Amino acid sequence: MAAPSENLLADCGSCFGLCCVALPFAKSSDFALDKTAGEPCRNLLEDSRCGIHSSLREKGFPGCTVYDCFGAGQKVSQSTFEGRDWRQQPSNASEMFAVFPVMRDLHELLWYLADARGRKSTESLHAQLAGEYDELDALTSATPEILMSVDVSVLRSRVNEVLLEASDLVRAEVAGTKTNYRGRDMIGAKLAGADLRGASVRGTYLIGADLRGADLRLADVIGADLRGADLRGADLRGSIFATQFQINAARGDRATRLPESLTRPSHWA
Image (cartoon, rainbow, N blue to C red; front, side, top):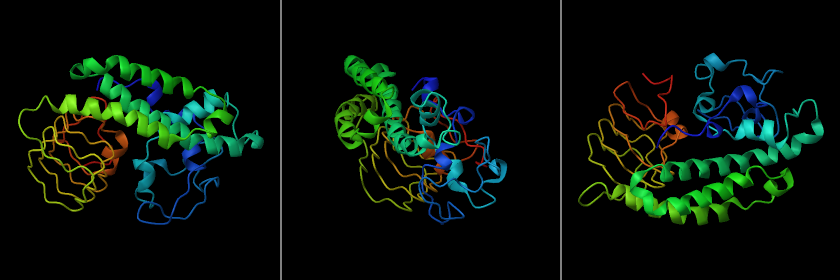
């Protein structure tokens, strides 16, 4: 995937702290407290900045450092609600908080479509991918009422059909039989040094898996749960449908090679 569109990259400075208000937290290893949906996090400042941003992990909020909204926050704040902050206009609050997770899901689908149509091997699908992208992109500019009525599961099912076709074309660049771990429970799996080129790990549970030095080039990683997975020295260049959210949730180091569209998390060794 080439450099992603700016509208799919989070710009917290243009958002009204929506992920810190609209979403619920459950006290756990990821969050130091319980918080209901619509309740502002106690660390959220009046200017929508986080009061402990530089020490989130140390103070029990590593989940905040993992989350990525795909640019949905600024879209809802600056476009859908035209810069009207929920603090200054409380009447907007409930709608804004309801729209945000829908927008986040739409932007995630746009990310996958952009990835697929940015590859030469999917040329035969470019027109279809572009059509799906344009339709979803237009939907992100709809009114709050329309956005709240969107059935994201239906959209995901439809878009997934062309994403699967794109995945097959991309992974076909790797010769021979490819590993298929799709949807499997691989929690804690020992896969250090594994040859997973062109593999399918779609929806695979890889929580805490040992993937040190694994070769995941051109692998389909959509929906793979990489929380705590050890990616030190792993090669994910060219992997399809990888997201910043997944990378943030994993462990890695300077030897981990990432797709061009993603950045190395600051908390990695």
